[in-house]
Image 1 (tube, helix red, strand yellow):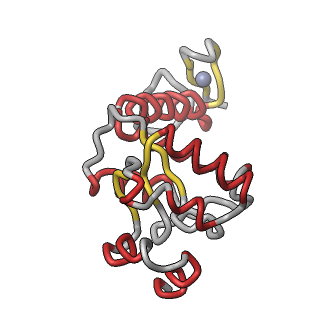
Image 2 (tube, helix red, strand yellow):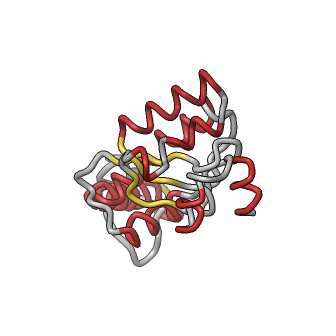
Length: 171
Ligand SMILES: [Zn+2]
């Protein structure tokens, strides 16, 4: 059996456990481990990616605990949305559903502040009323909304219609 020396294993091991034409001093397992670390480090250094991960994680937990459903948005979709909306990443942004009876998705999302998000979650847990919940997204209440899947006419129609009529109108 031909052997090679891996500087991480600090041992001579079967040469079949090395990737040919790659780092000669590392076995396959250690080559992969190194590549993974490099990828993670690179990923970790992009502030928007880090922010995306944070926002997604919190929305994931809120979905399960408060809205009793699973988030229906991938982190890559969230990243694209944040990029397209040009949201200032120094802001503490949170992701909530517009319609609390449906999962957060690219058709049902809203970016708001931490305080507004916490209020919305609390109100939904206590009252379970879409009407009251959605007041927190109504422009009239002047709560911070940084971007959402709501159509403009939908935002305006909230004033005059009941939520159920509005939702019906929307779908
Ligand atoms: Zn090794």
